[in-house]
Structures are given as structure tokens and as C-alpha cells.
Length: 485
Image 1 (cartoon, helix red, strand yellow):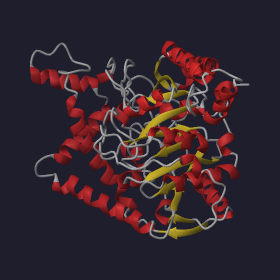
Image 2 (image 1 turned 180 degrees about the horizontal axis):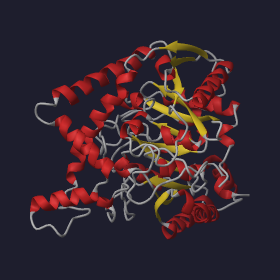
Image 3 (image 1 turned 30 degrees about the horizontal axis):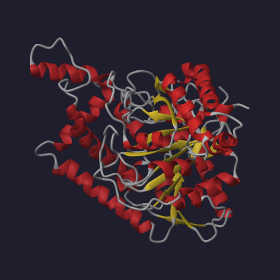
Image 4 (image 1 turned 135 degrees about the horizontal axis):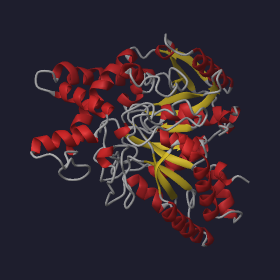
């Protein structure tokens, strides 16, 4: 038995029966990391000794007949979530040696559930990117084709799951950074409703957009992780106080009577033929399972990219002002004057993409331009929210492509930021609206590259999108495919 290939629910069953131990499972994961990660580049930091100690402790909990679905399960954490005693770099030189004195709420919840953290995954610097080529430390490669991008900014987490370098992982989604890499790596990724998962201890990129979510091998694992990470947190002012449902109850084999909307704007020009065929075939499967599919319109979709790339950089400009070389993180020691130290610290500490977005955001917020740029983008955001509200008046969920193309070649869009930004066309609107979205594997391109189906629901109706994704998954075998590294 190849233990690293197990899902959470499969591993939990074997652990509970005593057929395997967490120490054995965690060892198998580290063996796999040692075998393939020099080619994939999924991890920035590994904590083997700490993980093995946690696995031994989890085995003790299991022997006592205690613990839950995550007890003893090896997980990977995107390196933008604070982990006490484990460095948190955000993929940036400016935080290369930063070790947080506390853990994020999500990490604390996983630790309380006796999960085993194996390491911190690579990412685009400060989560700004769509390909995981903007990390200061390495480029992550797609396990399905090592010449291709894994998506971003949670590319390390998605690649680690796809390559069986962990059983599941945690990512973050600001404009598609869970769903897009999940699609490109052939795994499941869910962006929860904004406010559904605590952002406390998440290093901020764009505070009105950032959200933490699971990246898993199947929908059942996704529901299990959602049960653990969701919930109100008084430490996060944007956290919504509400009862968290048992998401595993949404794993029901029934779509009869469900109304599924197909946004016409997501199937316009520029959609790759392989993606269109895969998504249209998936829609036919969903329809065959009893759902009623209908066309809907989201008329302001075309403005989402422009609005996002004003709102997100503006918030990033504000959030990243704290990295000045004074309080923590990298500091240029050669500077003789304060202003010179600020300039050299930020110029050397931040990569080109982060600098580009800070400049854009600072300009958008500057006197005389605020109303024309940031203010107008916020108005467009409201229109996009209204589009979704109108669509959900007649639909339970919406289904669409995740990305306009399969994963592209490494370096293909590095010199063309606009082309890179346009790869998020289908994920940005849901992020601006704060609604929930999931990517589930739905096919492969002619080159054998994964394609994802995006399912969207209104605020705090994740059960519906999990239900649709689960039924589709059970009717197909795409989620069982694994790359041959």
C-alpha cells in the first residue's frame, strides 16, 4: 500500500482500525517529498522532526479512542499563514527569516484536531501571482508536466497535494489563488465565503478579499477540512458569527430539482477549446444527474479584472507599508540615512511583481486619483455583487470554467503582466463578490493537462456547491487520476 496516496477519509479509517500509524503515514509522506520535491518544488520549509513528534502524539490519541477525522493526518500549510516556531516567509526575501511568535487561528484549529503539519508550501510572493513563478526562493512546477505552471498563488499547496507530498493542504484565495491552482493540478480547491474562515494570523495581501480554504484530493476530504477550519473568531473583525454546518452532510447523491445557472459571459471569446469541451461535457453530466441547467447573465464580468487590479493593489499598498526594515524582517544595513534605508530595504526585499502592485495601489489611492480609480472600482464591485445576487434569485448554483486555458508553460507570461492577470478572468468576480467557489477536476486537455469545473454559490451556501461537486465527482473518475512523476 502506497500510504502517501491516501485521502483523509481513507487514512482516517486505517488509522482508527490500527492498520497503520500516523508515524508510518507521515514517514511515507516525507519519503515521497524526498523522492519528488527536487523536481516539483512545492515546499519552502520542511519540519520533519516536529512532524514526527506530532505524529507519535497523534498515535497516542488514537490508541485512547479519541481524536477526530484529522488526527494523525499529514497536512501542508501555505507559507502565508503564521506558524509559531516555524518560519513564515510569504515567498519573500523581506520575510526570509521571520519566525512568528504565534500561529494563525486556522493552524491552531488544525493543531487542536491533532493534524500533523509537515511544512510550509511555496507561493507567489505575498500571494501576488497566478503561476507561483514570483516566489523569491524557487519556481514550483506542475506535477502533470514539469514544464508547466501549477497555478498560483497557492501553487505549492496544489502541487504538493497532486504529487502526494501531503494528504491535503491549506491555501488562500484572494482572486482565485485556491481554485486556479487546484484546476491546473487536477485536485479540489474551495474558496469559502468571505468571513466564513478566520483571517487572524494570515499575512494580509488584500484584506477585503483574502480567504483561507482547503486543497484536497477529493470532495469528501474538502468537506472534512471545512468542518475544522470554519467558524467565528473574535480575533478577526471580518469573521461572521454563525453556526457552522456539518459539511459532510452535503455529500448526498441527489441533484434532482437543483437549478444550475450557466453564465454566458464565461463562455465568450478567448476560452480554450479543450477547456470549453471539458466544462460543457461536465455540464451535461450534471444535467444527467437531475439538475435543471439554464443560461444566466453576469453582465459586468468584463470589468472584473480592471476593478480587481485597482482594489487589490490599493489594499496591498496599505498592508505592505509595514515592511520598512524597522520593526522586523529584512533590513538593508548599508544605508546611512532613514529614507535611504526605507528605499533600499523595500527595493531589495520585494520582488518585481510586488513592487508593481504597490506602485499601482499607491497611485490609485493618491490625492486627486482616489475617486477616479479606487472609488470607481469599488462601484463596479457593487455592480458585480448585484449580478450574482440577481442570478441567485433563480439559480441554486452557477457552473463555469475556472481558467480560460490549461496550465501554460513556465515563463510564458512572465514578461506580460496583463496576460498573466487575464488568466484570472473567471475567478476574480466571485472574489470581488465574496461568494463561495470550488474547483473540481472535470477533464484533461489534448496534452493531458488537468481542467477544472468551477461551481459558485451565494454567501454561506457551501453545502450546495459541495453537493454539486460531489455528485459530479462520483459520476466521473477524473479525481482518481494521478500524475506520473
